[in-house]
Amino acid sequence: MRMRAGRARIRWGHLLSRLGMWAVLLFWTFVVYFPIYYILITSFKEPVDVAKGSLVPWRDFTPTLKWWNDVLFGTQSEAVKKAYSNSLMVGFGGAFFSVFFGAMAGYGLARFRYKIGPMRNDNLAFWFVSQRMLPPVAVVLAYLLLYRDLKLLDTQIGLALAYIMFNLPLVVWIMRDFFTQVPLEIEESAAIDGASPWLIYWRIALPLAVPGLVASFLLSLIFNFNEYLFAVILTATRSTMFPIMLASQFTGDSIRFWILSVLALMNILPAIAISLVLERYLVQGLFAGAVKT
Amino acid sequence: MIASQNRFWSRIFLGPAALIVLAFSLFPLAYSLAMTFTNKRLARAETRFIGLDNWARLFDDERFLTTLQNTVVFVVCAILLQYLLGSFLAVLLNQRFRGRWFFRLSFLMPMMMSPVAVSFMIGRLILHEVRGPLAIYLMNHDVPQLLGELLMTDARGRLSWTTHSTRAMIVVILIDTWQWTPFFLLVMLAGLQNIPVEIEEAARVDGANAWQRFWRITFPMLLPLSSVAVLIRGLEAFKVIDIIRVATAGGPGNATESVTLYAYDMGVKNGEIAYATTMAYALLILITITATLYIAATQRLTRWRRDN
Image 1 (cartoon, rainbow over the protein chains, first blue to last red):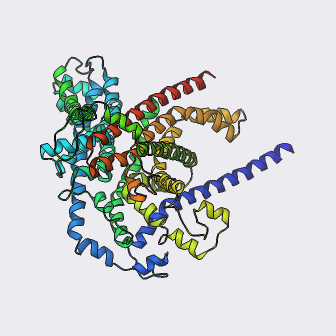
Image 2 (tube, rainbow over the protein chains, first blue to last red):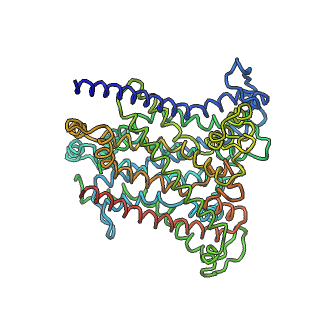
Image 3 (cartoon, helix red, strand yellow):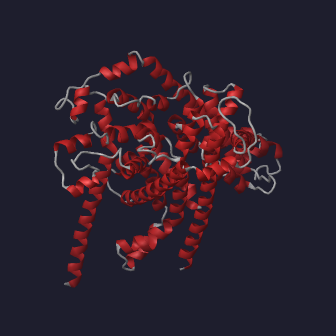
C-alpha cells in the first residue's frame, strides 16, 4: 500500500516538474524573441504607431515599407551600404587569415615537438590563449599612434590586421584540439610514400578538420562583424564599420526608432544565419576537448 | 610523431601565427607600458618622460575609482546571474524531449548578435522610458506598488531608470545577461552531456532523489568546467564598453561608466593618451591579479571537493 502511494506521488511530481520545465522554457523563449519581434515590427511602423506601442501588424497598425525603402534605396543608402560592405569585407578577410594561420599553428602544435626557451607545446598553446585575456583598451591607443605613423588609420587592412591578431588565439586553441583527434595512421603512411609535411597537412589533415575550420571561421567572422572598440578608434569616414554607424545614430532625444530598428536588424541578421549553422558544430565539437581536460 | 626532428617544417607551421601575435599584441603592449611613463598626447607635441606621475594621478582620480568600482560590480553581478540562469537552462535542455533543438538554437542566438544592436534593442527601445512597450503598458495600467518597484517605476507609476544610479546599472547588467547567458548554457550543456549516464543511474538505484543527484553528483562534476567558463566570461566582462556606451552612455553622472569607457573618453576625446593608457594598464593588472587568485581558489576548491 505504502509503496503504491509513493509511486503515485512520484508520478505527480514528475508531471509538475515537466510543467515547470515547459513554463521556464517558454518564458525564456519569450525573453529571447520578444525584443527581436519588437524591433522587427517597429521597422514597419509609422512614428504614431511606435508611440502607441502597437503589437500586432494589420490588426493594430498598417505596416509600411517606407523605412526599409529609405535605408536601402534612399538618401542615406550609400552610407549604409558602404558601412555594411566594409563590415563584411573586414569580417570575411580577417576571419580567413585568422583561420589560415591559426590552423597552421594548431597543426604545428599538435604534430611537432617545440622547445622555445623553457616553453613546450602546452606552454605555447597557453601563451596563445593568454593573449585573449588582455583588455583591448590597453593596446588600442598604442595602435592609434602606430597606425597614424604607418598610414593605416581608417583603412580596412589596418582593422583586419588587428582582428586577425584577436582571433588567432581562439583559432589556434580550437584547431590544435581538432588535429590532436585526427588519427595519425593516414598521415604516417603518406609520409612513408614521400609526401612533404605541407602536402600531408593540406591534403589530408585539413580536410579531416573541416568542422573545426567552419566553427573557428564563423566565430572569428561574428567577432569581427560585432567588434566595437577597435572599430570606433581606428576607423573614421572611409572605413566606418556597421555597428559604429548604428551607434552614431543615437543623438539627442529625437531617436528615429523605425530607422534604427531597420539598421539593428541588418546588424543582427548574420548572427541569426550563423547560429543556424553553428548550433550543431558548437555543441558537438567545440567543447569536446575543453570538457575532457 | 611524423617528423619530430623536422625543425624547418615545425617553424613554417607555427611561425606566422607567432609573429603576428608578437607584432600585434606584445609589441603594442610594451609600447603602451613605455607610454604610461610619459605625457604623450594625441596632438603631436613634444613628449617628455614624467616618471610615475600618471600612476600617482590614478589614485587621486575620483572618477577613475568610481569607474573601477562600477566595473567590478558589473562583472560580479552579471557573471553570477548569467552562470545561474545558464546552468539552470542547461539542466532543462539536457533532458530528452521533442523540439529540443528549437530551444537550443533560440537560446544560443543572442550570443552571436552585435552588442551595439542588442543594447539598442533592449536599452533604447524595449526599456525606453516613454516610447518602449513596457513604459506604454505602465502608462495604461496600474500595477501594485511592489511589482512597480520590480518594474522600475517612479511614484506616479511611470517607468523610470535612466536617472537612478542603481536601476541604470541593473539595466546594463540585464542587457549583458540577455546576450551572454547563452554562453554558460552552451558550456554547461556540453559538460552535462559528457557525464556518463551510469553514474546517475547508480545513484538513482541507491535511492538518491533528483535534488540529491544534482548536488552530490552533477554539480561537483561540473565544477571544473564551470570555473573555466566563469573565468573566460569574467575576463571578457571586465572589458565592457559598447553596451554601456549605447544604453546609458555611462550615466546618470558616471554611475554606470566602466574603466574602458572612461579610458576611451580620456584618450580619444581629451587626447590624453598616456593617462588613458595608464588606466587601461591598471585594469590589466587588476584583471591579472583577480584571475590568478581566482584560478588558485578554484583549484583549491576542486581539490577539496575531490578529497572529501
